[in-house]
Image: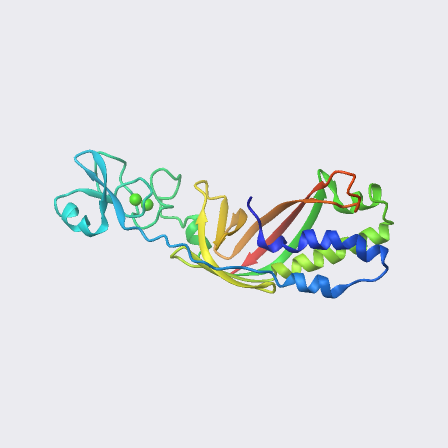
Length: 259
Ligand SMILES: [Ca+2]
Ligand SMILES: [Ca+2]
């Protein structure tokens, strides 16, 4: 299952919500402990030792050490492993940039000289705005707490405010996307590093840190401003009654980042 590390706090928050409510005390220490999210950083070793070449119209996977020889007798190579070879060849159209897998004739507009999304992402981004919404199915979590769980509007609003404040503080910070497909992040919830990958349609950025995965939707991006969305689902026992089924809670964070 794909998990966004940023929302690690949500299940605990909601599980303790009712304890806190019904025992009439707000145990902030439990809450704050959970803010120190754990992140392991195992750098994935993605070094390639083999490279595809186009040899007499056939694609052969050869050792990187043997590349020079093949290029010497005119074979085309695919160094960025995007399936497009670097010079005129009979295996593929020619790659317009064989050092960048996000630039090739298969990705519309990527060869026309405009910076692609991967290129725009490179740099250090700072969170400037966050907007967090939580839902149960299609109903806002706040309404669900009133209508189904039976909280007063004031109680529900206070709970939602506490949740969104915590999530917003977790999302405050900086994210540096490096050209070599690594990243570093420094958020209030902690610092991490790992590797990144952009989906083929360039709409989704995935950050890998060890076994953790953070999926970020790229809604729009320019040289300086990036509108992103991070969302995650949780199955939770909202009414504290083990007899009733757990409900699916979705948390959606719309974030504005600036360089
Ligand atoms: Ca290529
Ligand atoms: Ca390429």
